Length: 237
Image: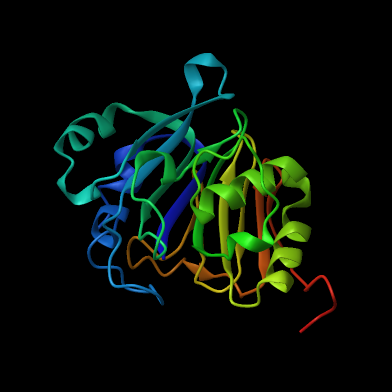
C-alpha cells in the first residue's frame, strides 16, 4: 500500500529517479504495475535525500499529502535536487489512517530516512513519543529507530510474528548505507554502473532488474550488495 525507491551511488538528480523513467514513482502513483494491495497511490508523496553540500550526512525532505502526479512545483525543482543517496515514496494510506504530511514517508530520526510499504497493527508496536504521526507507518518507523537500524532484520521478524497479517517492506538510508526488507510485498534490485536502485517495482524494462525474494533483507554500502534471509523470531516458516 505504497511504492518506494532508494538510491545509493554517484550524485544524480531526484528527477532522474522519481519523475523521468517511463514507469517512475509518478506513474506508479496512478498506475502501478506490480502493486498487490490497492489500485493507486494518491494519498501523498515524499522525497528525502542527503545534502552533499554538507558532507552528505544531513537528510533533507520534501513531503506532500497531495498526489505526486499534480505537483508542478516539485516537477520544476526536482531536476535541480541532486544527491548520492535518495529515498522516495508515494502513499496509499492504510484505511483509517490520516492523510497529512506528517503521515507521509520518508520519516527521519535526524540520521536515517525511512519509508514503509505495507500495513501493521499498531497494537503490536511499542509507543514512542517521538513518532511523527499516529499512523501505522510512522509508529513503525519510530519503533525501528528506537531499536537501531543494525537490528532491522530482527525487528521486522519479531513484528511479523506479533502481527501475521503485517506487510513490512522497509526502505531506509543514512547517506552511506541503503537497506530494505521484502516482507509481504514486492522489492526489486537494479545494479547500475553508477550505483544501486532498490524499488517496490521496476521503473523501466531494463533486463537487469532482479526480484528480491520475500522475507529477505538487502543491504547496500561501499562494499557492495548483500541479501540475508529473514526468519521469523520463533523459527523458520
